[in-house]
Image 1 (cartoon, rainbow, N blue to C red):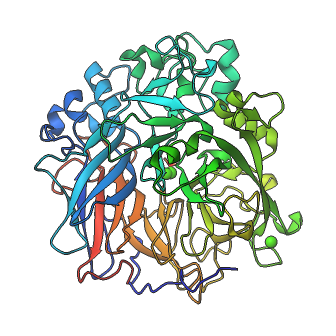
Image 2 (image 1 turned 30 degrees about the vertical axis):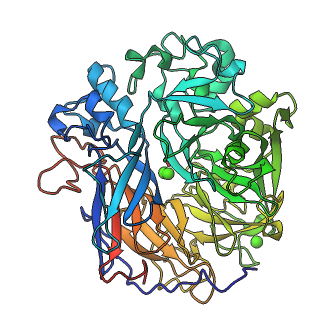
Length: 599
Ligand code: FEO
Ligand code: CA
Ligand code: CA
Ligand code: CA
C-alpha cells in the first residue's frame, strides 16, 4: 500500500531505558541543551528573569509558561525562528504560597494572563553543530510575545455573527487573546496554526449560567452547576471571564489561530471555518487538486476527528490569495467502521481474527461555507457548537484525539489517541478497542487514492501502546521483545525520511515521559524505540525534527508538576540545576559528530 522505499528506519541509536531521572536523557553519542526557558528575554527590552520578583510587565516581554507546540523556520545562514505555544500557567509552581485564584494578588493573575499565548524567538546555530541557542543581543526584528490579551480578529462564516458578539465587541469580529494553545501546525504559505484547547477552565459563572446558554456551555466542559467561582479567577482582573455577565465570551475561544511569525505587527486571526472545539492542533497538507486540507483532533474523551478542505486551491507564491483559503471550505467529521465482527472486539484488547484493528471510514460534511449540512443548525451554529453538530452527524467517539500529522513520504495520516480511562467494555469498537484505555494508541488514516481531499478512507491501528509484555499491545507486528514501552502518545511528527516520531504525556507505566521513533515501512516497521526522556513531572511536546535532520527540538512542558510540589518543595530543578525552580523550556538534541538524528 505504501509507495516508495523510505519511512523504514536507518535508525541505529540504542534506545534510552525508562527512568525517573531529573534531566533530559538522550542516547549515547547525543547531547542536549535548553534553548529558551520560561522568563528568558523575548523582546529586546525584557528584564532578566527573577523568580522572586515577577511582574506582568516583565512576563509580557519574556518567554511564557508551559511551552507546547514548537515549529522552526530556517532563515538562511545560521539563524532561524522558533514559534512556541504557551499552553497554560501553573500558579502553584510559579508563585510561592499560592492557594488559588480567590486569594491570588491581581498582579499574579495578570502575570498568568501574560504567561499564556505564544512566542516568536530568533535562534542561532552554535558552531557548525546541530545545537541552537537563543539570540540575546541585537535587534531581533521578528521576536514577539502573544498573550491572553493580544488583540485578534475573527474571519470566516461565523465572524460577525450574534454568537460571537459581546458588550466589548458588538461587531463580533475582534477578541482579546488566545487561551490554552496546545499543539499546532504550519501552512504552505509560511504561517503558524495554533490550537486553543481546554479553554473551558478559564471562565466562571458568577451569578449562574444563563438558561439559553446552558446546553452549549455544558457540551464544552464548562461546569454550569458551579456555585462558587474557582480556578484562576481571571474574571477578577477582566470581567469578560464571568460568563453570567458576558455569556458569549466563551464562544470566542476554542478556535484555530493563524499567526504570521515573520510580521510582528500582524493581527492573529481566529479562523471560524475550522470549527470550535478543544483543538489540539491543526496540520495542513494539499489535496491532489491543490485544495488545502487541515486535520484536527478534539482532545477530550469520546470526542471526534475533523478535517477542513478549502474551496479554492493553493497557488504557490500568490500570498494574498492563499491567506484567504482557510476562510471558505467544508468542515468534515470522521466516522470509523471496523471490518471484524463485533464479537472479536471483546474488551481484552487482543487482535481480532484478521490480525488487525482496521476498517473503512467516511468524512461526514458538517458545513460548507454558509451552508449547514446538519438539520436544525445554521452554519454559524455548526461552527460555534461543532461538537453538537458532530453528535448529530453520528461521528465516531474516539479515545482523546490529540496531534495529527501526514507522513511526507507515505501519505498516511497519523493520529495520536492518548488514552481514555472512561471507555467501558460495552463501548469498545475496532478503532477504540480497549476498555479503560490507559495507554492510548496510534491510528493511521489512508485516504482514498492517497488524496487528502477524499471523503472515504481506510484505517488501521499500527500501534496499541503500553508495556510490550502486555498481550493487549501491538507494534505493527514487530517482535515485541525488542521494542520500548510507550504510554499516552500525544504529539506526532515525521522526519524527512518518513519515520514516525511520537512524544508522550502522562506515562501511565510510572516512568518519565519521552520521545520515541518508529519506522512505518520495511523490515523494521513497528520497531519503536525511545529516543529521549524528559525530567520529573514533565510532558514531552513539540517535537520538531529540522529539515537537515541534525537537530530535534522538544518542548519540556511542566517539569516538576507532581502532586504537592511547590516553590518551597520543587520536584524538579531542570534545566538550571542545583536548588533552582523548574522552568518549562524548549530543548534541542543533536549528535555530537553532526550525524542525522536517530543514526
Ligand atoms: Fe494539551 Fe491535548 O494536550
Ligand atoms: Ca480487523
Ligand atoms: Ca498535547
Ligand atoms: Ca496531552
